[in-house]
Length: 122
Image (cartoon, rainbow, N blue to C red; front, side, top):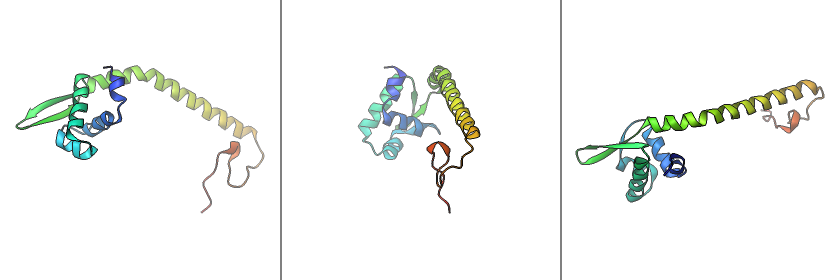
């Protein structure tokens, strides 16, 4: 299964979020997610098979942790798209600023120019 398919499932993303701060046993994940132990174990298996988490045995329990390298590879792939998105937002901001500079008429009460609402008066 491709990493994006694995990460498409919300509980798997939540598991990664919980493991971000360090390794945790399955029981902690079950409690934090309010999902059954078999479901959490299944999600962990999928994450492990995709190389996104790894487990180590500590006495009677397995401790899971995030493997950073696959996430770095995903981030490297997404980076050009992030730059494109940022560039588009910057262009939109400049365009709206230019529109504000050319429109000298006062905005209606409770509204900024271009129909964007302002914060209510306190």
